[in-house]
Length: 289
Ligand code: SAM
Image (cartoon, rainbow, N blue to C red):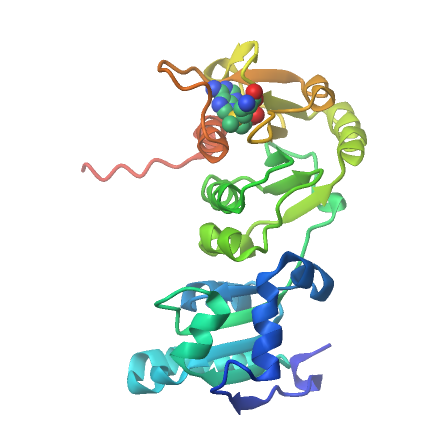
């Protein structure tokens, strides 16, 4: 539907945390409500700007009245507000007390948005070129997931695939940790069985699946990542990779360690792997001249 055919959204001023619209927005702090409504919250100018720029559907923009005291901020928020309304979303003007109650933290951002959830389909994960995808087995921690999405985006991975029972990328802590990369990074999800079928096709199309494992047989620095499309498969924070997923890998890589720690944090291990996998593709930013 073109933008002109959409009913323009409304603007409303709300100052009470007991207002029914505010109550339903606050309810999105709970996973079960986010899942039934297929909505989530994003806070701050950057995230809301990124969401709109990448075409995510903003249902409601909520902003503080205080933005009217600052000319620069006012003009930026009014631009966002115009775009949201032109696409059919509503705008709520409110106060610090209401914003704090929505985001559940002091010093709440002046801008918050209610956005429609959006997952990529498995069909979007193409086994082509030298593309890199990150797959996560049952990731539990929202901060880890958000950090991994941000790192995947920064290092040029095509997207993130969630396997099995995982935390959702739309929890407030996960969204915060992505720092806006959520809107630039396709995220798909599938069960372990679906992934195992998908992995068989991926390998028969010439792709690699590099699992990371504390018993991995290969030093992660010894693998040639520059030739094939690859999935970098990371294990669960407590239990590592399941046996079935480990068996589906073309190689199991170990990241060398030299201290007393048993293992690396999942997000850190993913960062180290992705840096090595994408090393040949990363442009040098040598500022020494
Ligand atoms: N107790 C778990 C285990 O036995 O696998 C530790 C899991 S670790 C916190 C989470 C994930 O990070 C691992 O499944 C693996 O994918 C990756 N990882 C962490 N340190 C690693 C290392 N030194 N080498 C390879 N992978 C590592």
